[in-house]
Every structure is written in structure tokens, then in C-alpha cells.
Length: 249
Image (tube, rainbow, N blue to C red; front, side):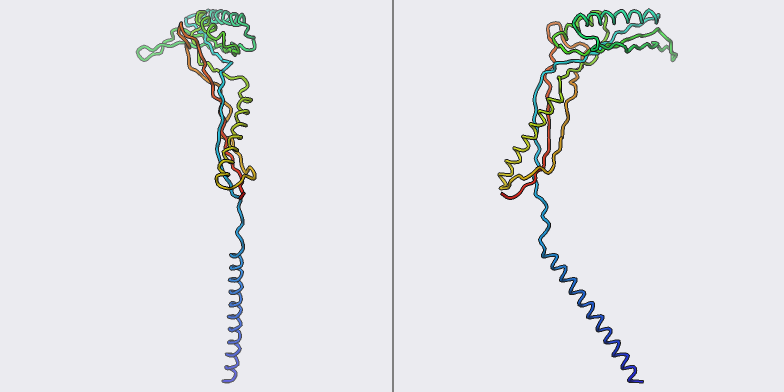
């Protein structure tokens, strides 16, 4: 009986010893693999340099968009519309005499609404208001003041905001955008040379601006009798951000 127990214990000891040796070798293998992995060179991520640059140019607007409003108030809606139409026709006729093409004139927007007054908390109708809007695309700014003078003299009741425009703004913007990219390249090369590295490629480029919108100037009247309407200049500016890959020289 004692011999049987002894044989079982011996067998279990050999099994346990085998298991211990197995895990020991496994642990050594894992540690060896980890050490080998740590000794491997790290993956080289490309070094980069990021710069921002801009460029700009100045242009005088050579176009304008005018919005005129002709309105009349009274009791007879039909008569009011007739007077508004008559005044509108006179303005359009004058615009044609200034060699403004018909496709540059829009006058279809007509509105009519009752006019109310309030007395002792009650709304009382006091007639009607009829108005027509005239929009003008003006390509000759030399006659800008002439149009304003005649419009006010012929019964135009309001001159809304004028928008001054530069012809072909997208082309001008594209030229400035290209210059901004060149400026960014020059700045990057300057920094790279100072750091003892060289530029090898463009990694990323980002446009940080957009083509200009119309320049709006508020005016019910743009000038006094002894002054001239001047739209000033419009700045066309482009800005970019470029990232370059660099390497040792």
C-alpha cells in the first residue's frame, strides 16, 4: 500500500515538474521576444514643417449695383400704381439715354399694401402704399453721380445700399492665391535652411481664404453737392497653410 502511494506521488511530482518547466520556458520565450521587439528600430514618421503665408492686391471697383425705390401713398390704389409706373418709366428712359442696356435694368418688383393708423387701440386704414424697385447693373462708374441726381429729382424716394464690384474677381483672387503659395514656399525654405534641413515634398496644402464678395456701402445719398462719390479700393487677399516634408541635408 505504501509503495502504491509512493508511486502516485512520484508520478504527480514528475507531472508538476513538467508543468513548471513548460511555463518557465514559455516565460523566457515571451521575455526574449519582448526584448527583441524593443531592440528593433522605431518606425520613422516623416518630419514636417508647417507655414502660413498670404498675398494681397488692391483694385478700384469698376462696377456697381444700385437699388432704387419709387413709392406713392394715397387712397386710390389704381391711381397710385399709375403714378409709380409713370415715375419708373421716366427713370428707365433716362437710364437708356445713358447707354445702360435693358438687360442691366430690373423693375418687375411691385408691392402694394394698406397703410394703417392706430387710434385708441383700434386699427384704422388710412390708404395704400404702392412701390416699385429698380435694380441697375452699372458698368460705367463715371455716370454714377448723374444717375443719383436724376433719380432723386424724378421722384425716387429711396436709394438703398450700393454694391461696388471688381470685374472678374475670381481671376484676380486666383493670381493672389498662387502668390500666397509661392510666399509659403519661400518662408518654408528659409526656416528649413536655418534648421539645417531640406524640403523634399508638399505633405498638405490648405486654402484659408475665399474670393471677395461685393463691397457694400450704405447710402441714401452718397455725396454732398460739392463732393464726388468715391468707392475707394477693394482688397483681394488670399491666405494658405502648407505642410512640407523635410529631411536632413
